[in-house]
Image 1: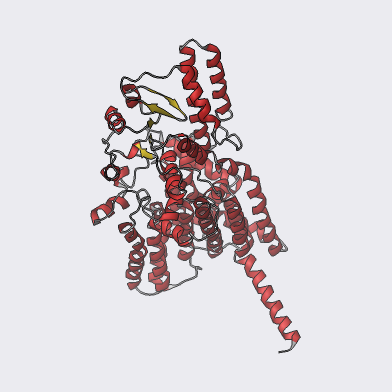
Image 2: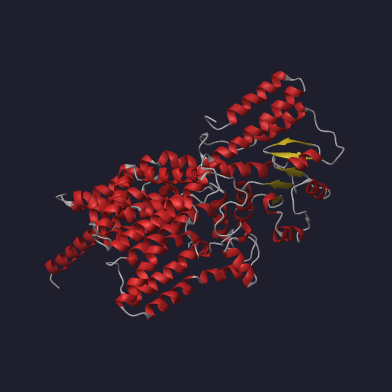
Amino acid sequence: MHYDTVTGIIEDLRRVLASSAIERGWLLALGALIVYVALASPYIVDGDSAEFATLGALGGRAHPSGYPLYVLWLRAWSWLPGTTPAHTAAFATAILGALTLGVLHAACRAWGARPLPATIAVAMFGAAPIALRYHSEAEVFAMNGLVAALVVWLAAANGPLRGRWRGAALGLVAGLGLANHLTCVLVAPIGVYGVVRAARESRPATYGVAVLGLAIGLLPYAYLLIADGPASWGTVSTPSELVAMVTRRAYGGTTSFMLHGAPVPWTANVAACLATIARSWLWLPAALGVAMLGVRIARPAGETRWAWALLAASLVLAGPLLASRFNIDPHGLGLYVCQRFHLLPALLLAVPVAAALDPPCARVPRPRAAAVLAVLGFLALSVAGLPRIARIASPAMQLGMQNLLRALPHDAIAVVVADDQCLGGRYLQLARGERPDVALVCGGLLPTRWYRAGWASRGLAMPPDTGARLGDALVATGRPVFVDRSLGDVRAAFPSYPFGVVYRVLPRGTTLPPPGKIAAINREVYRAFDLDYPHPGAGDGYAAIAHRRYAGTWAAIANLLAAGGDLEAGRAAFELTRQLDPTDD
């Protein structure tokens, strides 16, 4: 073949690839992958990330509903070269985040947007703080977003498939989505519309094909029947136990978010959801997107009136309506917990935002160059969000649990209550081999038979509550016993004193050390703690919680010293409290 011919073919191929990279969103997805991988933290940052990082390394069942598809995804990518299991799981999640942006770009195009407005809209969503956060740590919501984007794309009139293939794909994606996170059912209005469209394009038998695809997509739940192991939650050996796991019976059912949540006005959580969505879209584009939904329903373009109306319904279901069901106070740590559910409605808004941006973008003389600039804008917005992400991804939570474990004497028993300590401790012990001699007991799981049976098989029988009977059972072992500060019944029934971030529990009748000795013991303990990282602020999630535990210990010691008459030592202890507390707390 002539040299000029080969050169021409290569040049044409390069031009096609460059065009596709911009028009199909590949360049944006690649940029997102680089950013999300760069942001991936080698540390666990909350209880869920700790659990999933552990399961990614070892396999097993997560807490109800089990999330088998995401766990299997983490297992499939466990070979990635992360520096820690948490890092590897974050890399696997970053891949999901990048795929989400690529599919969401295709969905915006299928709903009538040109490449440039689709790129701008998806770039804004991908660089939003909640997207950066949940696309770069071990959490199920990145896969949930990918499922939603696939449903919106496949259901579109200009989607990639037609007829039976469209119906089969939508059924399969729906089943896989339910095997990841149950909230994907909130995009059912669009998915069902897509299946109806598929049946009209071919024949009524397409409904059966879609149902078959749904059944196949649910097969990952079979993994829960065999996923036993040291990191597994509960027991699933019968169909009834599988149903209980999937329906979250332990948490009060599929409509309950926190078993012992507080009564919260529905308006508070709806307002928090809307505020998160608006901030994610920098306010004005969010307003334009909502307005465009109304415009497209009144004057359809790119899709039918029904399609736009059902997209609006999905947005309301996944956003305000879901938020109104929360029994979590959306402030402080409660907002941190709630915001993960705000990711889905923020994603759905990308389609009408792209539609709103389409008319002005049509006048841009060089749309491809502008699309490249939009990708650069994604990188700039991501950089702007780095300080916040760095505070959330602080090593403070992991080091807080690591400090606790390393401070305990050999063969100690420690009862903790909070999820970050329970699951963080399991991650350190099971996935990192940290202090396996310590019996780390999760007080909140003691009412469950499977959890107590597991400890009984290891020679530690405990009652189903955290009252004085628990103290009797633990002290009777003769091992050093430590309990969480919140276990007031145990502390009231036995002599106890602050030790690190827990309380040392002594047998009845034992004389407590004097306050000065307690302060000296803790100074020695804290001297060995690893606190070499940026000090967290009051709103920095579990990093702030870790420091409140440190400060709480020294506040208790300050009170002991003051009550004993040593006011100077009490003031010194109180000064340590101020130094350890989160900034602006």
